[in-house]
Image (cartoon, one colour):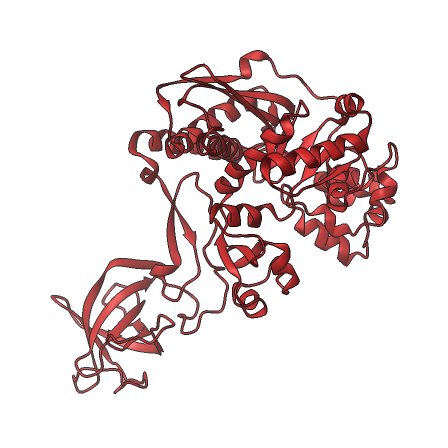
Length: 524
């Protein structure tokens, strides 16, 4: 396998999309942490996983960009087309990484070194991008070889991998962070040390995920070489009238297509690991690309790759994009494996392979159908995000969109309300009055102290409730200097009313001279 790797591709793509130059330090952030940076930024001390504030303090003048998978895929299509001019059977693993079966191409160009030189020159000339090439057995070993610019001799993949750190197992397309952390704590520091373990012992201790990682560490493929060729009827073909000429429309339709494609394979006990996306435009142009995946694709994974590919086709540079919209789309399962994670268990229970998984799959299809009728905003799911107040920490995300918090929920937020948060947060806060033992209104001073202990809470049109306990106040701040009224929050414990049990509520005080109190939430 030959792998062509474009270093720091998310950062390179972000810089290119913004019209900047690579000589300026730049970094791409997700959830306020660095996910990729340019070589210039790395020389300035920026590292992956670093918080934005620390990265900017280490590297003044750092250009900051947000993560955008669609942008990365769109710009990478130029690189894929440049490589495809020289080799056939090209597969996009992810934006920034291409895999090519090396045997035929190497024979045509007179050997692997010559093929690597031709590809490097072709990509640099046609796409203006620097890349590195590696060759080895299997995608995993070839990817690590590309990062080091090495052509590993046949049969020496295990020898090449042995001295590399065990952390190399945690690749972007396969989440093995927990497994790697466990292996490190057990004293296994290199791939060779892990590969030396017996396969039976690995199976007993680490399960299926450990067996796959163990195969990679030994220089083997993550899956056995014999794979089932899917029957032709599992291909999904869709015709569009009017034609697809907008990325946002294609992205919306991709959700439904991904669900249907995945469900058809699951009915046959299969899962897709190589997805072919083929399109015919209104003018008869033929477009196609194959995406290789380390893990079996989920419905969301299929939809994402369809969306990324449409980004590449429809937003390509003038002269490279199709002359008309897409009239026909075909999803082809180029390679499948047994869908163990999709197989229903004999007994109902919890975990993979149970009835709950089937119910979740059916619910996902229903949600996608509802969205096709009501639009993307027709089905929303809550996401816990970072923030100071309870209402602001909950963000509603359309079903199928990436559920990535804008800021880490557990980050340090000055003046944040302490846990626990209210079980119910009201859309419209309820106005109330809070008085002391003498019936005088209770207020909050500029130093965020109560003018008197609160004793009664009165709701307009209702009887007063006795306050048996309280905590706070906590100042309300946005992190910036505010010119509005001073605000503070309290937690109040109300006595039961007749047969009604006691209740805890969250109240907000606005203003100091004529305070206004509202109930924001209830602790059920």
